[in-house]
Length: 206
Length: 157
Figure 1: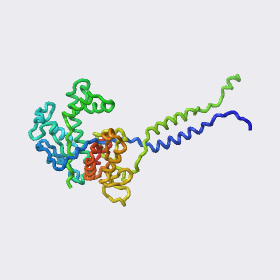
Figure 2: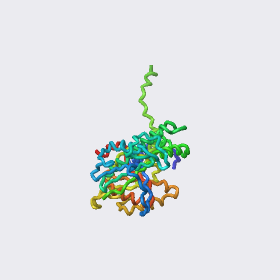
Figure 3: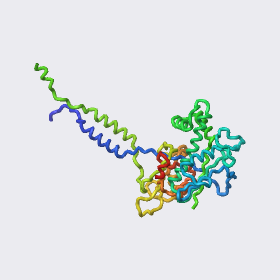
Figure 4: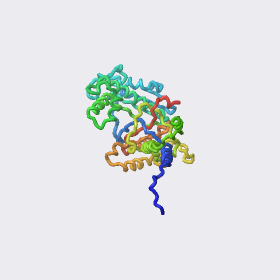
């Protein structure tokens, strides 16, 4: 047999093969990142524990009936107005918190019939068994948005040091990028303490 | 003048030697970024609600997903169905599902685990509440109501 010169491998069809694979991955790829409203459930309470007494004025009652109608503090409202009402209630600040300090960062009306302090203000959501999930999420979202609004305002006004002038959402974004930063965590804790998220879900009525 | 005449050459073909490189680059990008859908849906694809206060879930491996919606197959019944992994289950199976998800991770990571509830907008809140009760009973307290980011008004169209 005649020894032939070692000729190069023909790589002309490599592109075709690569294209084939490329198209396969293009078709199968899904780039959805899961996003959602993060909530933390309360820990399970023993049956016999009684809830601590809460004054009626510190409870903001949100009721959704089975026709997805919204009742806030015994009055029918539209979903668009819920956020404003919640802000008003949380930020009322007419009294003192558990440590006896008045709320000097609150800008509410200091009404006698609304909440005493953001740390005492409880928002309670009561749904019916057949309320739609979409409505429920909308209400949750509006209530959380109310807290975010207040926290942003507080952060912009009262934060000192290197985070001065930043909003709460800005800080959360910063926190995501960094590994661990005690200053940042302290700032966020300070805001969370000023406006703690107290959202309670009552069991749906049958 | 014959020298000028010689210039009348054919246009050379475009060099395509770099084409495989480009294609490979794209290929690698898609190979890396791709995630195969692990479960096939037995319920109708849930229409997620829109919300503005959404946060992205990081660390995909720490997320266990519970699907809620109507079954594709009418023989399964018409009510709200819960899908865990690859089959339609009942509320009582959630406990075992979360335990098996937890087993895949060590103690440190277990604390960061999140349960994502992907439910259709028309689901009853009662069903969701039952799920939450089960999660509460085994201390899987971090949950995420999966929603797309957008205005709340989209939920009422």
